[in-house]
Image 1 (cartoon, rainbow, N blue to C red):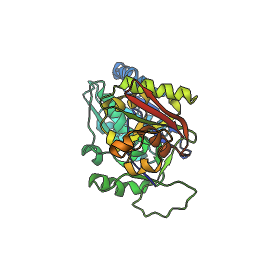
Image 2: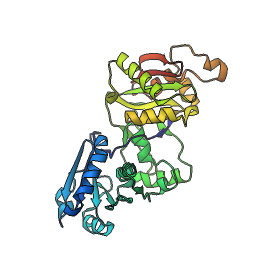
Image 3: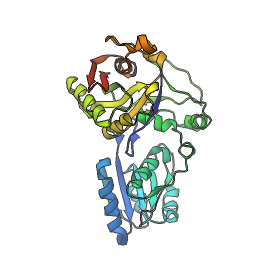
Image 4: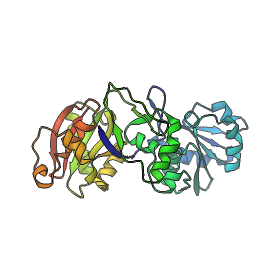
Length: 322
Protein backbone atom coordinates (compact mmCIF):
# COMPACT_ATOMS: atom_id res chain seq x y z
CA UNK A 1 0.00 0.00 0.00
CA UNK A 2 1.50 3.31 -1.11
CA UNK A 3 1.03 6.38 1.08
CA UNK A 4 1.52 9.92 -0.14
CA UNK A 5 0.95 13.48 0.86
CA UNK A 6 0.28 15.90 -1.97
CA UNK A 7 0.57 19.55 -2.79
CA UNK A 8 -1.45 21.13 -5.55
CA UNK A 9 0.26 23.55 -7.88
CA UNK A 10 -2.55 23.94 -10.41
CA UNK A 11 -3.74 27.35 -11.34
CA UNK A 12 -6.99 26.29 -12.92
CA UNK A 13 -10.64 25.86 -12.15
CA UNK A 14 -10.75 22.11 -12.63
CA UNK A 15 -13.72 19.87 -12.09
CA UNK A 16 -13.75 16.20 -13.01
CA UNK A 17 -16.89 14.86 -14.63
CA UNK A 18 -18.09 11.29 -14.25
CA UNK A 19 -15.62 10.12 -16.90
CA UNK A 20 -12.73 11.80 -15.13
CA UNK A 21 -12.24 14.50 -17.79
CA UNK A 22 -11.13 17.90 -16.53
CA UNK A 23 -12.99 20.98 -17.77
CA UNK A 24 -11.58 24.49 -17.51
CA UNK A 25 -14.16 27.02 -18.62
CA UNK A 26 -15.31 30.16 -16.81
CA UNK A 27 -17.74 32.99 -17.49
CA UNK A 28 -17.36 36.56 -16.31
CA UNK A 29 -20.81 38.06 -15.67
CA UNK A 30 -20.65 41.84 -15.85
CA UNK A 31 -22.79 44.92 -16.24
CA UNK A 32 -22.07 46.69 -19.54
CA UNK A 33 -20.63 49.69 -17.68
CA UNK A 34 -18.00 47.39 -16.17
CA UNK A 35 -17.06 45.80 -19.50
CA UNK A 36 -13.54 47.26 -19.46
CA UNK A 37 -12.76 45.60 -16.13
CA UNK A 38 -14.28 42.33 -17.36
CA UNK A 39 -11.97 42.40 -20.39
CA UNK A 40 -9.03 43.13 -18.09
CA UNK A 41 -9.87 40.01 -16.08
CA UNK A 42 -10.34 37.99 -19.26
CA UNK A 43 -6.91 39.02 -20.53
CA UNK A 44 -5.26 38.53 -17.16
CA UNK A 45 -6.48 34.94 -16.75
CA UNK A 46 -6.42 33.88 -20.40
CA UNK A 47 -3.29 31.72 -20.10
CA UNK A 48 -4.75 29.63 -17.27
CA UNK A 49 -8.07 28.57 -18.76
CA UNK A 50 -9.32 26.86 -21.89
CA UNK A 51 -12.21 29.27 -22.30
CA UNK A 52 -13.22 32.60 -20.74
CA UNK A 53 -16.43 34.26 -21.93
CA UNK A 54 -17.93 37.59 -20.90
CA UNK A 55 -21.70 37.54 -20.37
CA UNK A 56 -23.65 40.78 -20.01
CA UNK A 57 -25.68 40.79 -16.82
CA UNK A 58 -29.46 40.54 -16.88
CA UNK A 59 -31.85 39.00 -14.38
CA UNK A 60 -31.75 35.45 -15.79
CA UNK A 61 -28.15 35.29 -17.00
CA UNK A 62 -27.00 32.81 -14.35
CA UNK A 63 -30.04 30.60 -14.86
CA UNK A 64 -29.63 30.62 -18.65
CA UNK A 65 -25.98 29.51 -18.49
CA UNK A 66 -26.06 27.35 -15.33
CA UNK A 67 -24.16 24.17 -16.01
CA UNK A 68 -22.43 25.53 -19.12
CA UNK A 69 -19.36 26.73 -17.20
CA UNK A 70 -17.26 25.41 -14.35
CA UNK A 71 -17.01 28.81 -12.68
CA UNK A 72 -18.86 32.09 -12.77
CA UNK A 73 -17.00 35.29 -11.88
CA UNK A 74 -19.59 37.88 -10.93
CA UNK A 75 -18.27 41.41 -11.45
CA UNK A 76 -20.90 42.82 -9.12
CA UNK A 77 -22.00 43.17 -5.53
CA UNK A 78 -22.02 39.86 -3.69
CA UNK A 79 -25.70 40.32 -2.75
CA UNK A 80 -26.77 40.30 -6.41
CA UNK A 81 -24.83 37.13 -7.19
CA UNK A 82 -26.10 35.43 -4.03
CA UNK A 83 -29.76 36.20 -4.74
CA UNK A 84 -29.55 35.11 -8.37
CA UNK A 85 -27.60 31.88 -7.85
CA UNK A 86 -29.01 30.62 -4.54
CA UNK A 87 -32.24 29.20 -6.10
CA UNK A 88 -30.11 27.32 -8.68
CA UNK A 89 -27.90 25.47 -6.18
CA UNK A 90 -28.54 21.74 -5.97
CA UNK A 91 -25.39 19.68 -5.35
CA UNK A 92 -21.95 21.03 -4.52
CA UNK A 93 -20.36 18.33 -6.68
CA UNK A 94 -22.37 19.32 -9.75
CA UNK A 95 -22.97 23.05 -9.23
CA UNK A 96 -20.55 25.49 -10.86
CA UNK A 97 -18.32 27.56 -8.59
CA UNK A 98 -19.21 31.20 -8.02
CA UNK A 99 -16.78 34.04 -7.22
CA UNK A 100 -17.53 37.74 -6.95
CA UNK A 101 -15.08 40.56 -7.51
CA UNK A 102 -15.49 44.33 -7.31
CA UNK A 103 -14.78 46.76 -10.14
CA UNK A 104 -11.58 48.02 -8.52
CA UNK A 105 -10.27 44.42 -8.21
CA UNK A 106 -9.88 44.90 -4.46
CA UNK A 107 -11.56 41.68 -3.26
CA UNK A 108 -12.17 38.26 -4.80
CA UNK A 109 -14.73 36.36 -2.74
CA UNK A 110 -15.62 32.69 -3.35
CA UNK A 111 -19.33 32.30 -2.61
CA UNK A 112 -19.87 28.62 -3.45
CA UNK A 113 -17.66 25.79 -4.68
CA UNK A 114 -14.58 26.89 -2.79
CA UNK A 115 -12.95 23.48 -3.08
CA UNK A 116 -14.27 23.04 -6.62
CA UNK A 117 -12.61 25.96 -8.35
CA UNK A 118 -13.75 29.14 -6.61
CA UNK A 119 -10.76 29.33 -4.26
CA UNK A 120 -8.39 28.82 -7.16
CA UNK A 121 -10.06 31.51 -9.28
CA UNK A 122 -9.87 33.90 -6.33
CA UNK A 123 -6.20 33.03 -5.97
CA UNK A 124 -5.65 33.68 -9.69
CA UNK A 125 -7.36 37.06 -9.35
CA UNK A 126 -4.86 37.92 -6.62
CA UNK A 127 -2.21 38.17 -9.38
CA UNK A 128 -4.20 41.18 -10.59
CA UNK A 129 -4.26 42.80 -7.16
CA UNK A 130 -7.46 41.40 -5.64
CA UNK A 131 -7.30 40.01 -2.11
CA UNK A 132 -8.74 36.45 -2.08
CA UNK A 133 -11.19 36.06 0.81
CA UNK A 134 -11.11 32.31 1.48
CA UNK A 135 -13.61 31.10 4.07
CA UNK A 136 -13.41 27.31 3.62
CA UNK A 137 -12.06 25.92 6.86
CA UNK A 138 -8.99 24.08 5.58
CA UNK A 139 -7.77 27.01 3.48
CA UNK A 140 -8.47 29.47 6.29
CA UNK A 141 -6.25 27.31 8.50
CA UNK A 142 -3.55 27.10 5.82
CA UNK A 143 -4.12 23.36 5.25
CA UNK A 144 -4.84 21.27 2.18
CA UNK A 145 -8.30 19.73 1.95
CA UNK A 146 -8.89 16.35 0.34
CA UNK A 147 -10.27 17.96 -2.83
CA UNK A 148 -7.00 19.84 -3.24
CA UNK A 149 -5.04 16.67 -2.58
CA UNK A 150 -7.04 14.92 -5.29
CA UNK A 151 -6.23 17.71 -7.74
CA UNK A 152 -2.53 17.45 -6.90
CA UNK A 153 -2.63 13.73 -7.67
CA UNK A 154 -4.51 14.14 -10.95
CA UNK A 155 -7.57 12.50 -9.42
CA UNK A 156 -11.14 13.27 -8.43
CA UNK A 157 -13.27 12.40 -5.41
CA UNK A 158 -15.69 9.52 -6.02
CA UNK A 159 -17.82 9.73 -2.85
CA UNK A 160 -18.29 13.43 -2.22
CA UNK A 161 -20.34 13.10 0.97
CA UNK A 162 -17.29 11.75 2.79
CA UNK A 163 -15.33 14.99 2.52
CA UNK A 164 -17.09 16.66 5.46
CA UNK A 165 -15.53 14.11 7.80
CA UNK A 166 -12.15 13.88 6.08
CA UNK A 167 -11.69 17.64 5.83
CA UNK A 168 -12.49 17.89 9.54
CA UNK A 169 -9.70 15.35 10.06
CA UNK A 170 -7.42 17.58 7.96
CA UNK A 171 -8.18 20.50 10.28
CA UNK A 172 -7.35 18.35 13.33
CA UNK A 173 -4.17 16.94 11.74
CA UNK A 174 -5.68 13.46 11.92
CA UNK A 175 -6.07 12.45 8.27
CA UNK A 176 -2.54 11.36 7.43
CA UNK A 177 -1.33 10.56 3.91
CA UNK A 178 -3.34 9.27 0.98
CA UNK A 179 -3.18 5.46 0.86
CA UNK A 180 -3.03 3.79 -2.54
CA UNK A 181 -4.51 0.34 -3.17
CA UNK A 182 -3.64 -1.51 -6.38
CA UNK A 183 -6.43 -3.50 -7.97
CA UNK A 184 -8.25 -5.51 -8.81
CA UNK A 185 -9.53 -5.17 -5.26
CA UNK A 186 -12.88 -4.90 -3.52
CA UNK A 187 -12.80 -2.27 -0.78
CA UNK A 188 -15.41 -1.75 1.94
CA UNK A 189 -15.25 1.76 3.40
CA UNK A 190 -17.19 3.79 5.94
CA UNK A 191 -18.79 7.15 5.22
CA UNK A 192 -15.76 8.98 6.60
CA UNK A 193 -13.33 7.49 4.04
CA UNK A 194 -12.79 9.57 0.90
CA UNK A 195 -12.08 7.58 -2.25
CA UNK A 196 -10.03 9.19 -5.04
CA UNK A 197 -9.86 7.98 -8.63
CA UNK A 198 -7.29 9.07 -11.19
CA UNK A 199 -8.51 11.27 -14.05
CA UNK A 200 -6.13 10.01 -16.75
CA UNK A 201 -5.94 6.48 -18.08
CA UNK A 202 -2.50 6.57 -19.67
CA UNK A 203 -0.60 9.46 -18.11
CA UNK A 204 2.94 9.35 -16.76
CA UNK A 205 4.51 10.36 -13.47
CA UNK A 206 7.79 12.26 -13.11
CA UNK A 207 9.84 10.85 -10.24
CA UNK A 208 12.40 13.43 -9.20
CA UNK A 209 15.14 14.16 -6.70
CA UNK A 210 17.52 17.07 -6.34
CA UNK A 211 20.23 18.76 -4.38
CA UNK A 212 18.94 21.31 -1.93
CA UNK A 213 18.22 24.66 -3.58
CA UNK A 214 18.03 23.40 -7.17
CA UNK A 215 16.48 26.03 -9.43
CA UNK A 216 13.15 25.76 -11.23
CA UNK A 217 14.78 25.96 -14.66
CA UNK A 218 17.02 23.01 -13.76
CA UNK A 219 13.99 20.92 -12.85
CA UNK A 220 12.14 21.93 -16.01
CA UNK A 221 15.06 21.15 -18.30
CA UNK A 222 15.58 17.75 -16.66
CA UNK A 223 11.88 16.89 -16.80
CA UNK A 224 11.47 17.88 -20.44
CA UNK A 225 14.55 15.92 -21.49
CA UNK A 226 13.21 12.83 -19.71
CA UNK A 227 9.79 13.25 -21.31
CA UNK A 228 11.43 13.52 -24.73
CA UNK A 229 13.25 10.26 -24.02
CA UNK A 230 9.89 8.65 -23.16
CA UNK A 231 8.29 10.12 -26.30
CA UNK A 232 5.84 11.98 -24.08
CA UNK A 233 4.94 15.65 -23.63
CA UNK A 234 4.28 17.77 -20.53
CA UNK A 235 0.55 17.35 -21.22
CA UNK A 236 0.94 13.63 -20.44
CA UNK A 237 2.19 14.26 -16.88
CA UNK A 238 -0.30 13.42 -14.13
CA UNK A 239 1.86 14.75 -11.30
CA UNK A 240 5.41 14.92 -9.94
CA UNK A 241 6.44 12.41 -7.26
CA UNK A 242 9.31 12.76 -4.82
CA UNK A 243 10.32 11.93 -1.24
CA UNK A 244 8.84 13.49 1.89
CA UNK A 245 12.31 14.73 2.78
CA UNK A 246 12.12 16.99 -0.29
CA UNK A 247 9.07 18.91 0.95
CA UNK A 248 9.57 22.65 0.70
CA UNK A 249 11.95 22.62 -2.29
CA UNK A 250 10.88 25.92 -3.83
CA UNK A 251 12.53 25.26 -7.18
CA UNK A 252 10.58 22.03 -7.55
CA UNK A 253 7.29 23.66 -6.60
CA UNK A 254 7.87 26.56 -8.98
CA UNK A 255 8.68 24.13 -11.81
CA UNK A 256 5.55 22.09 -11.05
CA UNK A 257 3.46 25.26 -11.18
CA UNK A 258 5.01 26.07 -14.55
CA UNK A 259 4.10 22.59 -15.77
CA UNK A 260 0.59 22.90 -14.28
CA UNK A 261 0.78 19.78 -12.10
CA UNK A 262 0.83 18.89 -8.42
CA UNK A 263 3.56 17.30 -6.30
CA UNK A 264 3.09 14.07 -4.32
CA UNK A 265 5.47 13.25 -1.47
CA UNK A 266 6.15 9.57 -0.75
CA UNK A 267 7.46 8.23 2.53
CA UNK A 268 10.66 6.23 3.01
CA UNK A 269 8.92 2.87 3.49
CA UNK A 270 7.01 3.24 0.23
CA UNK A 271 10.12 4.17 -1.73
CA UNK A 272 12.06 1.23 -0.29
CA UNK A 273 9.28 -1.07 -1.49
CA UNK A 274 9.63 0.24 -5.06
CA UNK A 275 13.39 0.68 -5.31
CA UNK A 276 14.63 1.22 -8.88
CA UNK A 277 17.32 -0.61 -10.85
CA UNK A 278 20.00 2.10 -10.82
CA UNK A 279 22.38 1.89 -7.83
CA UNK A 280 22.30 4.90 -5.50
CA UNK A 281 24.74 5.87 -2.76
CA UNK A 282 21.96 7.48 -0.74
CA UNK A 283 20.86 4.07 0.51
CA UNK A 284 24.25 3.42 2.10
CA UNK A 285 24.60 6.96 3.42
CA UNK A 286 21.11 7.77 4.74
CA UNK A 287 19.01 4.65 4.20
CA UNK A 288 16.85 6.09 1.39
CA UNK A 289 16.75 4.48 -2.07
CA UNK A 290 17.32 6.53 -5.21
CA UNK A 291 14.42 8.97 -5.08
CA UNK A 292 13.79 9.52 -8.80
CA UNK A 293 13.28 5.91 -9.87
CA UNK A 294 11.55 4.74 -6.69
CA UNK A 295 9.11 7.69 -6.85
CA UNK A 296 8.34 7.11 -10.53
CA UNK A 297 7.69 3.39 -9.98
CA UNK A 298 5.72 3.76 -6.75
CA UNK A 299 3.45 6.55 -8.01
CA UNK A 300 2.84 5.17 -11.50
CA UNK A 301 -0.44 3.45 -12.21
CA UNK A 302 1.33 0.32 -13.48
CA UNK A 303 4.44 0.60 -11.26
CA UNK A 304 6.44 0.52 -14.48
CA UNK A 305 9.61 2.48 -15.25
CA UNK A 306 9.62 4.04 -18.73
CA UNK A 307 12.85 6.04 -18.44
CA UNK A 308 15.58 5.22 -15.92
CA UNK A 309 17.23 7.89 -13.81
CA UNK A 310 18.77 10.78 -15.69
CA UNK A 311 20.84 13.55 -14.13
CA UNK A 312 20.94 17.22 -15.09
CA UNK A 313 23.54 19.77 -13.99
CA UNK A 314 24.49 17.50 -11.06
CA UNK A 315 21.44 19.10 -9.43
CA UNK A 316 18.30 17.25 -10.51
CA UNK A 317 17.54 13.58 -11.13
CA UNK A 318 14.42 12.41 -12.92
CA UNK A 319 12.82 9.16 -14.03
CA UNK A 320 9.52 8.57 -15.83
CA UNK A 321 7.00 6.01 -14.63
CA UNK A 322 3.50 4.89 -15.53
